[in-house]
Amino acid sequence: MEYRRFGQTDLEPSAYGFGAWGIGGSSYGPVQKSDALAALAEAEEQGCNLVDTAAVYGESESLIGEFLRGRRDRWIVATKYSFQKQGLERTLEQQLERLGTDHVDLYQLHSDPGPDAPIWEQLERLKQDGKIRYLGVSLYSHRSIEWMLDSPLIDGIQVAFSLLDPQPFLRCSEALERSGKGVLIRSSLKSGLLTGKYKPGTRFDKGRDHRAEDMTPQEIDTALRQLESFRFLEQTEGSLLLGAARYPLAFPAVSSVLLGARNAEQARFNFGEIPRQPLSAESLARIEQAQKALGLGRRSLLRRIVDRLRR
Image (cartoon, rainbow, N blue to C red; front, side, top):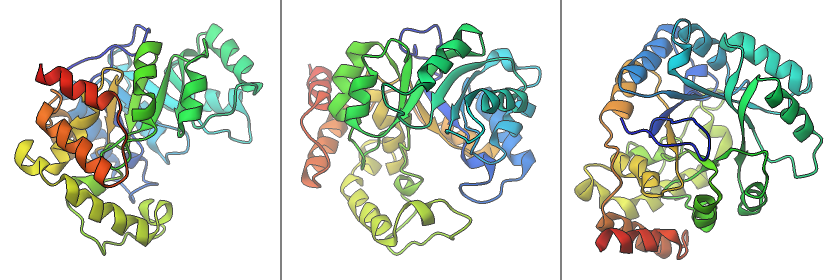
């Protein structure tokens, strides 16, 4: 496993981190406790040392807390505050109890509260108290990223980035690299649509699978049609999934790519069999062409990375 520095902190997360939304049972349907614990154990066996969760991910934090007994010092624990009604401090105390720890390595706001929100003072106080080591924010727009890069309180960000969703990351990638902030990438497989397993017409169960709530049938079909433009990765990189998962690692700003796993078999593949080295220059150039043809991309750091690899 490759390890990358998280911005200017002393954290060195694995190139692939464990995204723990799926094991909580609230996103893709119920998960057996034994399967969830086995997935975490297998991820650790393969060298994964970062787990990313949230209080709103069902049973995820409690399962992680049980798993971490006797091995807390081996893991970087990241969780989130989702602006619960009970407030920040009470929410964090409950999270620490569920996680079985006295501190969170990376505590993230689940969305951008704005630069003048009073929550920043609370977070700084909790950081000084040692309950939070480093602070991050999960972001969704280039404007949020741009102002966060100027904040001395923020140690890193989390942002969605995939073949089909290259923005806002590409627009801000150079600024992110210059800033020295850590970057966690979520949704590199676009909730599983980029695994190559699905075809247009696929529908997900409402009430059991978040994709039925988060995306309309038309959006699902559009995404599945668009991914056909990236099928060349099956020849150049071994499979669409392998290419999609590795794509963000081509960017120096990226600290870790979050991948989910609901059982040991999935964890063995995601953390043990997906290569860590970036995609080839040829694949990156073709990705840029496909994104441009689909109206998804823009000239950015990706072009300079391709040029650098070809030299």
